[in-house]
Amino acid sequence: MADSKQPADSKRPDLEETTNVVEAHATLLETGAAQSREKRIAETGMEPVSLWVFVASAVVLLVGGGVLGAGGKLFEYNPHPQNYTRPEFASDADTGPTVGPILEALTKRGKNIYAKCSGCHGSTGSGDGNQFPPLAGSDWVTGNTERLAQIILNGLSGPIDVDGKTYNGNMPAQAPLTAAELAAVMTFVRNEFNDVGDIVTIEQAANAIKIYEARPQGQITVKDLNSNHDKMLEGESIDPATTVDFETLKPAAAE
Image (cartoon, rainbow, N blue to C red; front, side, top):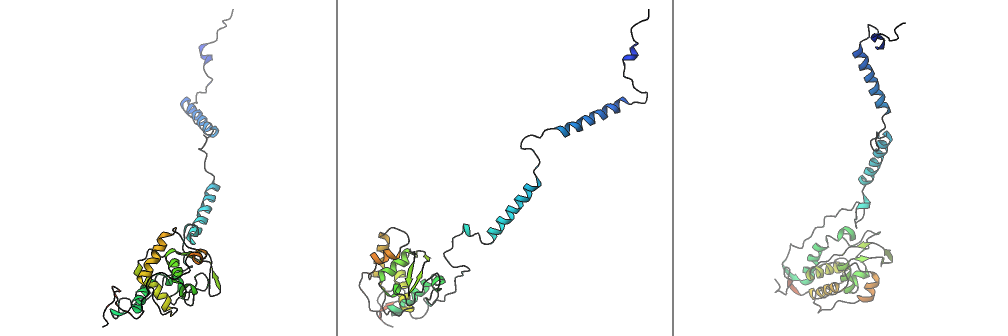
């Protein structure tokens, strides 16, 4: 009876004598690793970023940079006209005689203070004909002094009619001003641009400041001006020819 058991060598792999077992195993391992990498499922949030995302982001940055570079008006407030530059405004407030008529003393001091107003209203008080009204020939300047004082101190919001034309600008408040500063700038615009021939005294200007401090803070309107401030400021008037010391504005002997 033949032996049914197979020889032990028959259970070994049928390998050729030329087969290198180590190299064969290495090849199988590399193939398996490559297949694993190809079939691996990417974790959420770890996918490669699309080239279109980079392109879209670049376009947004370029457009946004162009908008901001062109002026960034959404983030900027400027009450002055476009391309505004404050002009040089020569003042002789600190030159010439030190004693003389109070009209001259206040006018020279007021000219120096008015320099910051000239960017809008012009060095000759003519305005710009569009957004900022003229001070020359304006009833708001030559008329009742309490109205003018409150415009200067509070600023003005909303439309105003000047010399038959409506202006709808936005004038910022010029306060705080001392009584001497307010008297000087009011005297200057009333006489330099309009030749009214009188002065606004420091006492009258001080009363204007009291009125300003008593009202709610904020820009004033034409309606409020006409309803509550269409009158002359209280205070004793002074002869414009009264001789004063230009520095103290106190009466002084004529030189």
